[in-house]
Image: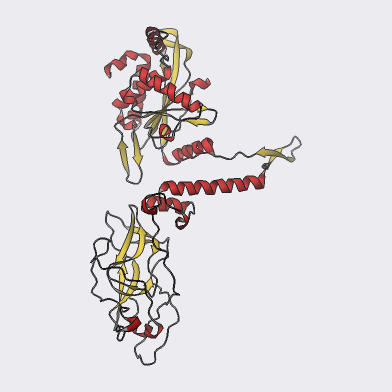
Length: 477
């Protein structure tokens, strides 16, 4: 007599409380061996194949692919124990379920090491001997017609006999992030040719498939809507609505990338902004003196942006909280040891943010030379992806557009951005006297998760003090 045992979703470790069914590896009616993987699940940490500790016939599965189950919920039921007459010689040899002892192991790599059983089906004339008990779980069982055997007096449990099918095998994907990305964009991983070792599907393969699908969809839409015109109601002088034409411009390329990054920043980061006016007269005098001392043949002049960048690296050394990022999955603030300083550069193709690597190790002249080099590459469209990624803090000089102030949007996943307005003559009280000074407005937008206003204010005040009295930098050199 066979016994039906219920296998529940085991504790997969690391404090995880649930898992999502990605793919079933067995069907109802299959014969499984002890420790044979029966389902592939995805947790918040990784993808895991879960082996069953029992050997026998699968009588029920609980949960469809894509369903999230808590730890301890039923996964499947297995009829264990060799039925009478199920073993013997001939074509049926070896088709009987394995013993009900089980290994007690639930994770791949911790089992008995028995080879996975070939997927088999129970012959219809033996279904009446497969099981004689209903599953212990109250969850519904997938049913199918049963072959009745008059000689069996005990009630027969109905077991699904699926049509013969050929398993397609596991998808060659290791990273759960790749699987999630493919699901979010409806990419069929089985149709992709992996570029990794042994055909492993990498994130680059999925990204390429996503871009291909988007380009195809865009081309189709443009072909169907060219020229695209939208009717927009407008108010006429007599109060009667009229219709005007409007142009639709696809968000793609640099513009689309900027839109995605800024939207993500405003969606994920609880930002706040503080600002201060600073007297930049002394800073401009120092710049003029530095450029005069180097002479006309000494290379590019030191720019105001280079001086401000040097001030930022000194300020970040004092306030490292702002040179960090937030790991939302781990719920951790990651403070970064080096400063890779990004700066906003406006080009004909749109706004880009080149990155000065290891800015904390450079002086003002070195930073200025690198900014000049990267700016020229940006204008000619020759910046590489590596030169546009990896920044830890961004400096945005929007004063070149003739504006006084702004509220910067943080360059995700960084924690802060310093904005600089135009430097212009303004009335200023200095040492109790009203004078005309070169004044600049400084704006700092920061991620309120990494620090509070006291830290942000201290950073901004230190920057302003260095702008007003550049000699303050000597304390940190």
